[in-house]
Image (cartoon, rainbow, N blue to C red; front, side):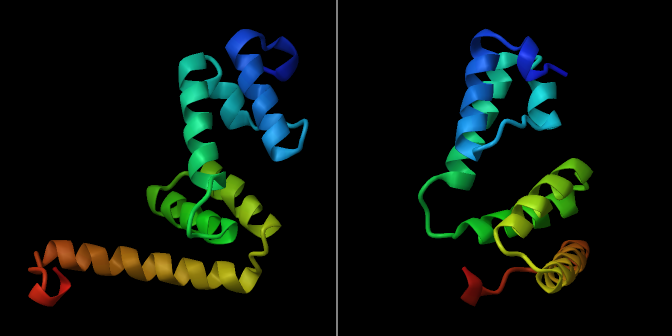
Length: 126
């Protein structure tokens, strides 16, 4: 992992932007690991900052809830922990998390059933 103190060039620029954007001195382990390939670090940070923090119709909590849901489905423990913490900081309660997990579980089950049974899409949904 590339720590802030050892960073330079493009990595330092991205780290400084992460710190300024998030109003923290902390750099998460995810960024420290992908910093080993500076173009990937820059591309990923720029895209994440735009999608999660840029203008849009979805409020910041809803964006984090979606991120948690997808991370659970993909089985990314790191992303679940990171974005669950971000969702809590934006107002997610334990009750909301429980409801979100119920929806994720139900969606995964019905998706698999629809795929397994090869259910044709209703014309009214098109």
